[in-house]
Image 1 (cartoon, rainbow, N blue to C red):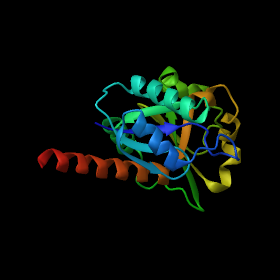
Image 2 (image 1 turned 90 degrees about the horizontal axis):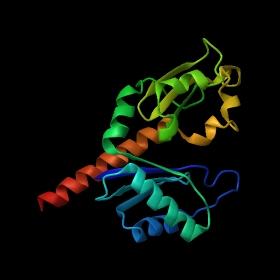
Image 3 (image 1 turned 180 degrees about the vertical axis):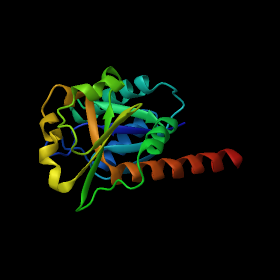
Image 4 (image 1 turned 180 degrees about the horizontal axis):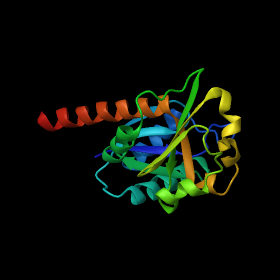
Length: 189
């Protein structure tokens, strides 16, 4: 089965530095196969026979701790879960000079629609929605600071999520689809 591991808080502001080539080796050593990393923010597509996201998260967190001496939290989502998020994501949302659109991937302890009530949002500024596994948020660039979402950073709630912009998330999904096609081709041969 194809999965994405989303690491929280690596290679940000010079902190928790992890080399992607070494991280790929860590995943392979931990038993993952067909490992691909995407950009430096900790996005790793891989295949595994293990069927439990929670089990994979714990296994990968332990492997990262052993190899890098860093206590990094890892969210694992399977292809179906990412597809659900992508289907909920409006096509017109972008991350560019006009618009800021982010996906807040949620740890299980806050993965519920009630999380929206806890966000420091100002009503009427931007668009926000919950879909299982994530909060989708988009705002015009001129209203980013007025939206209230900048207050989320540093809050206790923020410790239970990891953020990727919409462009990165779409690319992750494409890479997962490619990995799935490769997996199916391998089964056919």
